[in-house]
Amino acid sequence: MEQHPDTSEEGSTRGSRTDPASRGARGGDSRNNRTSSKNGATIDTVLVPVDVSEHAQRAAAHAIALAQREGATLHALYVVDTREMGEPALSSMEIVIEERKERGWKVLAAVAETAERHGVPVETICCHGDPADEIRAVADEIDSDLIIVGKRGETHEHRGGTVTRELLREDDRVVVV
Image (cartoon, rainbow, N blue to C red; front, side, top):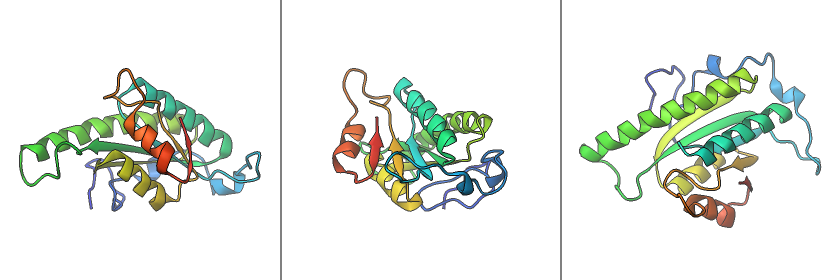
């Protein structure tokens, strides 16, 4: 299991998570404060995949506001895209992946800090692989009620992101762009 140097909680099979003490200042069991959406379903768990793009940052702000309003837990995810690299095997690619994970942890720390300021419990996860596959796997693992993504990521300047399109087309959950 991967463990980020600044955390003390056991990492998940998909990546590391923040220290439970840093998940927000809300006291007690926040599930008792859940509200229902228009169709009567509650939103308990929100997943927001992020990167350094402006679109992802707006998606994170929207996810934080929604999680705060619904009393939900926010899960912020950063995936190092290794589709073109292949999996590392003690090579220079392993160094590149680790550098990108460190960048990811910085992005996740900023999201977590903002969420905590708004009293939203937050967990952060950083992993590597195919982004759409990892997002779906984490969504399954945490039983996410909702995935909030940006229109496009950091590598797509002029068109909608391929990961966003794939999630909209192939995921059974509600995906908000």
